Image 1 (cartoon, helix red, strand yellow):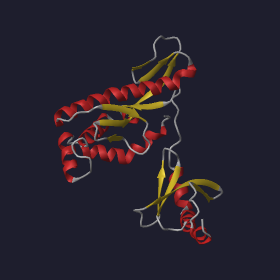
Image 2 (tube, one colour):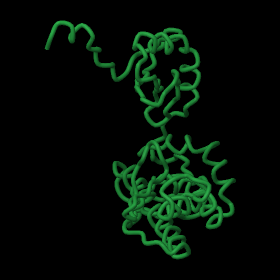
Image 3 (cartoon, rainbow, N blue to C red):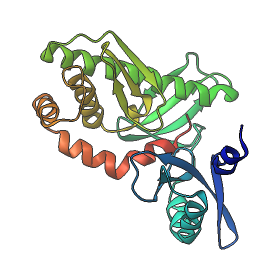
Image 4 (cartoon, rainbow, N blue to C red):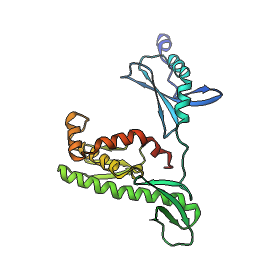
Length: 244
C-alpha cells in the first residue's frame, strides 16, 4: 500500500462509544448509513442502549461530539425503559393483554396451565422461568398460526412456513417464498394487536412493500388496524421488558 493511500485511508469506526451524563456512562452504538443526511439518535429498549446514525461521509469525531451534546437526552430516554421482568413466582405477566400472576405449584403434576387469572407452573422451582417462557411461545404459535391461515385463505395466498422468534427490531416479517416469522411477544398483547400483525404479514405475500395498495389490502383484511398500530406505538416497547 502506498504512503499516500495510507494517509487518506479512514480508520474503522468504533462499534460503540460511551457517553457520560451526571457520572453515569451510557452506551451508544454507531451506524454509518449511506442514506443518512444528518446525525440522528434513537433508543433501543431491547438492548438498553442508544444508536447514533450518521451520514456516510461524516467524521466520527463530529458524531462523538453530537452524542456527547445530547447526553441528557440519552440518559432521560434510557432511564424511562422499564426494568427487565423475570418469569418468576409472583410476577405479573400479560397473557393476551390480560395480567396473569405466575404461581409455582411444586406439588402438582404437569407443566403449565392457566386458571383464575394465574399461570400455574408445576415441577421444580429452577424450571419455572423456562416453562413459562416455553408456554407463552406455544400459545403464540397457536394463535398466530390460526390467524395467519385465516387471512391467507381469505387472500388466496400460500404460507409455506410460520416461524416464532424473538425479533428485537420488528414484530413480524414475510418473504417472497411464503415464509412468515413473528415475535412470540405478540401473545402478551391484546388479541386485536396479534390479529393485525398476522393480517399485515399475510398482505406482504401479495405486496412486498408498504405501498398504498398494500395498506388497502391490510385494511380490507383487518378493518381495526389503526387501533392496533396505535397500541403498538404506545405499548410495544414494554413487551420487551419481559425476559426472552
